[in-house]
Image (cartoon, rainbow, N blue to C red):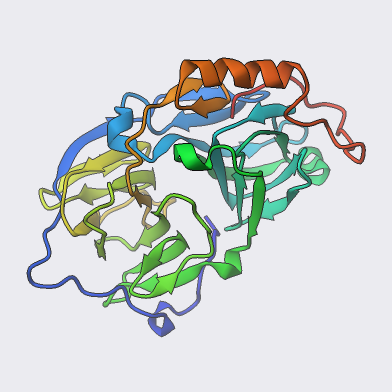
Length: 329
C-alpha cells in the first residue's frame, strides 16, 4: 500500500499526547462490510452497511474499492452519472483513476491522491481507470466516501479539489510506531489539505505490529474507524477488529487503535481510516445519486436530470470505448 510512505518516520511531527483528563472513547458497535460490485463490475466492500445514519452523520456511504489485482483488460470504471446535495471523496491507495465532470473538474489521481468533488446543486461525472492501466492490468485499491451537505449548502455551485499525496500532513506517534496521513481536518495544528463545508476529519493510519495510536479527537465530532487491512483492537475496551470491519465509537476525547503484534505475512501492519465530523442533524431524503432534505427535492433532482439541467457531457470527453453501464457511486 503506497499511499504515501516515508523512509524515516522519526523526523515527522508527533501526534499530541492526550491530556490526563481526556476520556478514551468506548466502542458502541463493530460491523462487518458485505462485499458487492459497483460501476461496470469492480469489487467493493460496503463499509457503512447496517449502520444507522444517525451514527454516521455527517457521512452517508463509503466503499472500499478493491484491493484487487487486475489482469490486462479487466480494470473497470463507471459511466456518466449525476449527483446533487453532497460531496464525494475518492482516495486512491494503489493504482490510478481518472475523473471528469460536466462542471469542468477532473484529472488523474494515483497513490495517496484524493479527488474531492462537491456536487452541490448538481452535475454529471465519470470515474474510470486510465487507458494504460486497462491495457496492462495491475493493483487497484481505494476508497470512496460520501459526505452530506447541510441544507444551506446543497445548492452551492459544484467544486472540484485535486489533493495530491504530497499535500497531506504526515505525523507519527511519540514512539514512531504509526504513520498518520491527514487528508482533512487538523491534528495538533497540522492541517490536511481538504477544504470541507461540514467540519470533519479524515485520516489514514498505518500501525506497525504491536504499535498503538492514541488520537486526540474533538468531543463534538462522531468517531469511526474502518479497517482497510490487518487486525488489532479499538477503543478503551480493546474490541477486536480485522479487515473490512467498522468500529463506531461513543463519546470522549481520544480514539485508541492497537495493532496486533502478529499480522499476516503479506501485510506491513494494521491499516485504518479514521473519520469524524460535526453531525448536521437534518432530515435526509436519499434517492440513488441524490441526497436532499425532502422527498420532493429528490423527485425534483430526478426531473432536473432527465431534462438535462444537471449538465452535459463535455465535448472534449474521449471515451475509452469499453466502459458501460450506470452507477450511483
